[in-house]
Image 1 (spheres, rainbow, N blue to C red):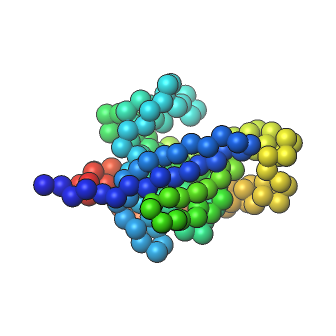
Image 2 (tube, rainbow, N blue to C red; image 1 turned 30 degrees about the vertical axis):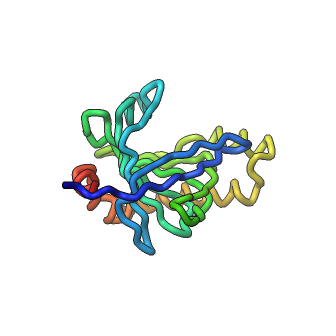
Length: 177
């Protein structure tokens, strides 16, 4: 009989005031990385990036949260399990609280690496809008841009995402549940 994984509740603030709570299964709780599984993504419309479906209703994502980092990484899959790529949210370093409660703030930028493709920084326009409206201060916006740029450069050099992201496939994640 499979064991029951603990759950975490990720309170994800999207400035100025939209909070979403994502409940995910905690698969690995290590000092250097926390791995969770979003086992059913409920979206109205498929998320397409450069004309390709990255995820859709019923998709799964294996998420990698690195304590102290200004980003996370998600291995995205379509509803049929097809791996589509790695998606990294640029965000404030998450805080972890008792009871599996996590908090972080989205900083709008994302880095997308499609399966077999090259890294692209997404949503600069959203960060510019947030900065213009005072939802994100200039120093934080600069930090977000630096993080996205560094991840893109590391991806181009072939050293990002880290090996653990390749090691924890959807099949491996599901085997832990």
